[in-house]
Image (cartoon, rainbow, N blue to C red):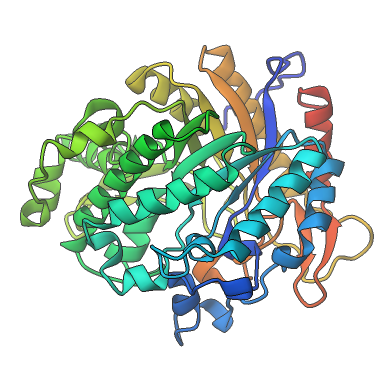
Length: 455
């Protein structure tokens, strides 16, 4: 298949197009129990023997909790217009509900003030996978009460920061929360249960809707949305079996969390795919889930070529690795044209809701310690060049894409992979916490300055 690479040297992104960088709390902050914070499920998961590569934890990570001013200065040097970060629920409500921890709120106030002083718009994500441990002990995302707990947390945060945050997102990648945390056990809280997964999915959707209503009732008036990861599916052949498998894979990955919001129902394939693990949900739940969004954040990393495989549960489909392709350190195929296609697909299926590319990036090998003033990362430069061009092609095809956020600002804790996968455009020496620009950061800075793709 063609890579679809073309030269967009004459293309300029629209006036006001928002260029940003993204991170998440547990991956970079460190000091997870500082200033009165409570433990999260990732604090427990990372300290459980055998769950993390090399036994890595987020106890220090990038020490952003103490070095946020240095990191905001790096954002300003890059010239970004926005910074997407997540708020740690258990910093704000150490027990998940009830008592508010002002020490946690004060950290995010300081960070937000520093960003605004630098002329950078804050985009805050309420939930990037770090549920308070105290709530997990009460059932976590399996307990219907979690929608009320999340709305309480959201309301506290809206009241404290709503006058300064430029964009809000309720959830980040609910698909990963459920698939990794409740179905396959590779991520916190580490469950492996077919019957739990649909319940967690639905309660995440209910929590999103409840938080949306809490926001509409608050005094905050910035745009608010949700962030989903999408992975375009391509059938390995035109056989009836592969086409059906591809449709199931698409329903599971791409439509599971968008159909309820925009269409008020889960994909029609689900009862057959899940069998007796699929419950009947009250129709009234969708009244909140369908609360109107201001935007959708789309995270794109890879596509999948799929073929039928009855041994795989739910999708009954498996990936077919493509020959002659470039793969990242995480084993993900580099295929920029799929990014254009998924943005067009979203518009065609769900309408003209504004879109932000809230994550896009790649892990390639970088040395543990920087050699010189700049880290040379040509594969990542190429990755960003082609994927930013793919966003440009989607805009040319009429998709209302309003911004792009590089993942990630910093090398960080890549969840259960620990510190072995480097996604940052800024290199972090985890032994010394020294930050060093990579050539991909310098390339991105040039993109931002010209709002075009430099030759």
